[in-house]
Length: 417
Image 1 (cartoon, rainbow, N blue to C red):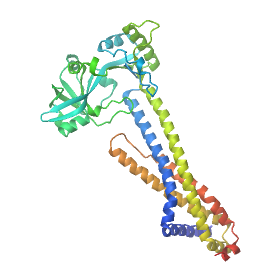
Image 2 (tube, helix red, strand yellow):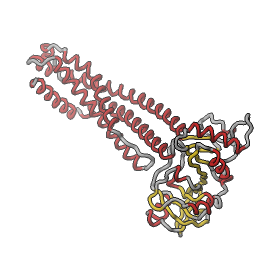
Image 3 (cartoon, rainbow, N blue to C red):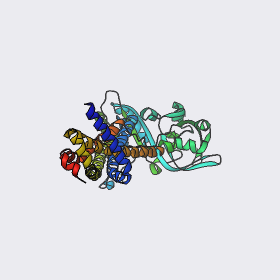
């Protein structure tokens, strides 16, 4: 047992020495494995990170929330837009009968957004921002993460007070810090408003497309004095299910009430859409699955090429060390020791390639996270997967050369040149 360990240890040192001596050959052999592991782990890391962010957003936006809108969310290349273009927009007045008649509704709110606005503070200004007007219960349905300040009070909502909450890009651009923005008077489209709150940086939503970072949030009654939502905005109604009520029950009741509000006949189609976050996240999961499959296909081709490269270098190594193999067998080295020696060397090559691939993935995560688009995380599971795949490729690629080396006749091997 001790002799076997010594032989393997010496073989390991010899393998490392060979890798150091033949740097170019080692690099070319590792390249295929590195690219393959990078493709697999990068794609898995990206899709896992996207899924995690989508699930977090679903929890934040509410998996029990229905959006009453003009347009459905199930778009695509064959989207029949002509069926929906003449639909009426949701109205603020429709919120009252929804609150009164939909028994499975817990909270409801009205909101609209209008982009391309100019925000000014003294001599500073920002172009292309978004005005986001919301009614009173919006913050209870869609949790806003405040850095400082508060949401609108009851009277501020009802009376349309000229107050505002600033997204991260707005207060950073105009004031530099959150504290400096508080209680300052800014103007949007020439209308003055006092800042009563600032939001933490979040990034654009991957689900509903709302970007709070670039928004000025105001009470709905005040917002409609700046923008006519019937012509220049995208209004929608949010309805959150009451405790104990299912989303299906809420949608059924909401559909009936909306058809009654719109006075639709029994045979007429709905002139509104009831959108839900869970449907979108389900579609995204299908996309993630396809991306994962594509990543695995690309990676398999790269790993096959890399595996052939490793097998080739192992055949060359066996050829170069035939004399040494003969001497080891002559002094009593068993076939399994020779086999393990070359399998170990093949695995080291592939593990190095896998580690390089993981380093590239890590550098990619750092670069993506610096853009603040979404949180990109290289998980321990993906690291273990990358190293495991590397080891398996090393065993497969090195088995035939190692097997041939273990079957060499010691006399013939010693005499070979």
